[in-house]
Image 1 (tube, rainbow, N blue to C red):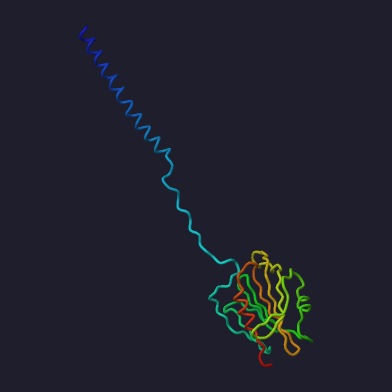
Image 2 (image 1 turned 90 degrees about the horizontal axis):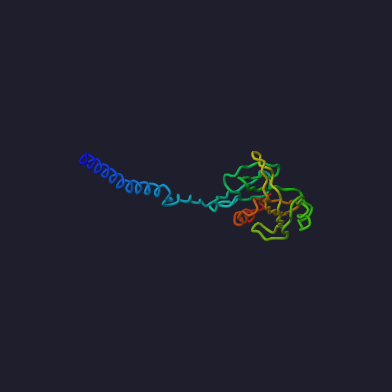
Amino acid sequence: MKVRQSVIALAMAGLAASCAAGTPAQSKTQDRSQAQSSAPASSDPPAPQVTESNPAGDIPDDTVFVAYRHQGQPYEVQVPEGWARTDLPTGASFTDKLNSIRVETAPATSPPTEASVRSQVHSGEIRTVGAVPRKGGKAVQVVYRADSSPDPVTGKVVKDEIERYVFYRGGRQAILTLSGPVGADNVDPWRTVSDSFRWTAP
């Protein structure tokens, strides 16, 4: 009996030792799994690249200008190639996205003055008005800001900066109006257009 009890006691002692030895190893495995699941990501996702774009209304530097003449009117002006044209009785308007050019003539009993050109601005905030030299002759220029016409699709209205030039010859005035969104850098294109205006033979 004593021998059998001794054998049983040894067997139970060995089983207990085996269980005790296995517990730390299992705990280490669980600890590693928990550490891996709670560790932060090795790196953040790459930030998207920012695509540069010109401000709204900027006319591209590579724009090609072509001559426009209205049949029966004694003037010529350069306008950007490809802009949509709408014919008017004594001229035309040209549009592309947010920019527009309008040229037309009207009878005049005397050369334009600052007061007469100012009176043509029926709504808007006048910035400057005065005589300016251009290659085609002297003009009176008025610069003002006004709301654009609503977009026919979205109904959106933007604030435009408008340059209007009034040229005169022999009882007739030519009115050249250039408009685009406030903030657009169109100084060079508008100078190209306004410098290109010239009276032609009647």
